[in-house]
Image 1 (cartoon, rainbow, N blue to C red):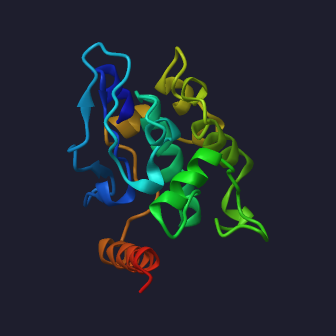
Image 2 (image 1 turned 30 degrees about the vertical axis):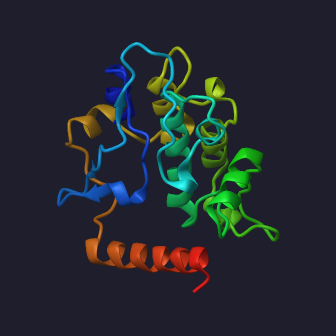
Length: 198
């Protein structure tokens, strides 16, 4: 998705599980392009928008952001897909922002509430670490080769990108939309309670 959007100088800026829909075919569909923006030749944009747990540090710090913010959100989402929780979370948005800016990425363990170490293979840790670089220009996907660097990362070694883009590859697993919706509702209900203190 980012490969296509970025080739048209469009940044999405709001990749999160709530904006990913599972089609009956098992393929993901991206919804809600409300924060998407065409850069129109400009290097950066400055609007503060997005979901607190998914914001890149440069957005929080109002340094301006570009396509690198999309790769950040992909790294956040991959972490969340593997562990069930975002890597930077606090009971308040300000606390979450502080953790994002500190950038202390953890892959589970005794002192962490961010999943089990078993959730993250060495390739997954490397991919996420490269996508969550605090320096936007150093993020995987931001080099001269762009999305090719992401697609050729060892984490995606078994992906047949040509077949996936053509929508002829069989999805890894069929999803149960009702179960996914229920899990998402429970998770977000717990987060809402944490934010409000209820």
